[in-house]
Length: 214
Image 1 (cartoon, rainbow, N blue to C red):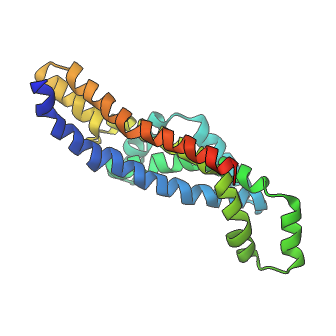
Image 2: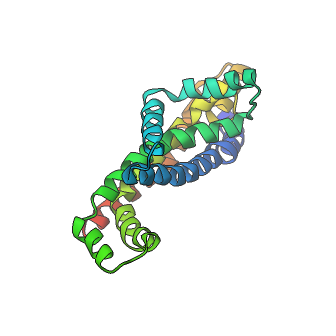
């Protein structure tokens, strides 16, 4: 217990400074980019829709560690150098944007045809249709699914140890290597993830139940 209490501040610092911050930034990228992708595909914008569909399929079909490897280690060979933390944020953000895009698209397609026709009959501008009619309803329906993906992303931040981002799991690994005691640091990591993600999962379930009755 004494050893666990000694290493707890270092693990918490790595969790807040890297694991949590990277998750938040990647979520923002995924939310915005995913919406753009979904709208492009729904509107079937020439060329862009096909390119976006191909990109979504490609990224979803390749694992995150491989994407991290190519962005961080291969791109410098062609003159593009990206920092480790930035690589982690971008890779996770773009990767999950592809999943967000599919969820967004499902939400948009769930809007009844009559509402689209009503907007047309009222001669509402396209911007108003999307901002005031379509997106508010779509987001309300898909918010629980998006929340589940955010929790999944949060638990995949440890993949960034492949590119030496000093997030919590890598910190635990380093502590274990220096002290030859791995049980305590990895147990603390597991408990921190549990304490951070389990309440969020419960909140998302309650939100999902509540939205079903809205």
